Image (cartoon, rainbow, N blue to C red; front, side, top):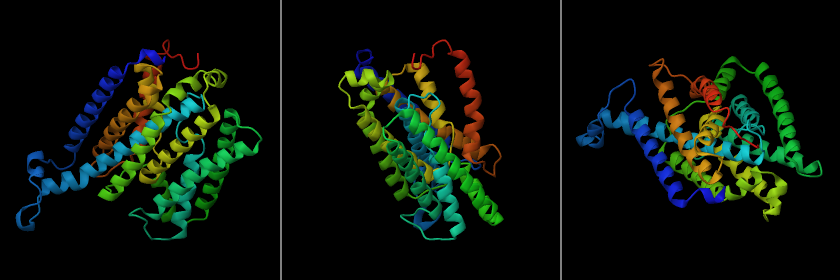
Length: 343
């Protein structure tokens, strides 16, 4: 597998994916309830402080939201690749280890506690969701360690159990909460994009980019682990160490995405499978291409969410589910004879 992918091929495909992402981002920035002119927007704020509507709409509203969608999409798709490789489960996605229930529980606690402070521009819901998502993955990992030995099946079962327990706690808190608190939490759980300031975009984008680059350096080891732990060990790979680092970095990247946008399903499941069906299972290209095309997918989905019932907006998580389900079934039927996962 390693010798079939040349650096030139990887670079060419990556640059093509980046070009597609830029094209989609520019096109989506022109879509909205109000038409805008790029030329007028690039002229900057109006003279003497007078407002320039094109500048305000494009650069202060749409571009930050599109960048946010790209960051979240890249994070979820990249993490999906790693979870599927490490857990050797084609149905694994960034939420399989209880990230969704942990983030939801954190968001619920933030809402019902009534606190209103902010941390680096983030609301309590985002901060608590980040801590909840990250803490849950570490809890699942610790349970796996306490069982006496690390095993993928045990890790998955621990994730299922923690998911069920946290979901029960969320339902209990929902049943005793005020109706407006329940609405805020449910809306957040459906996944939603909101305009963020430059600091949040730079900080979150930097964290996600650093995490994805770190995961890319593990891609060769992930290739070996995909064939089985015994084969990987025979190649001199420290399997447990690679799994620990890969899951930790993936959990961190997922937690950043969840804190930004809430729970958005299907991105981490569908995009890696779609890319794998087209370019193959080599993680050296699967990881970067899935991350970039995950950004393309979520930017497109968020644009549809902004327009489909304008001027109202749908949570983007609804759109990803509506697009993702049929898309996945079409790919599965078209390429079912080519799927060779774990074969």
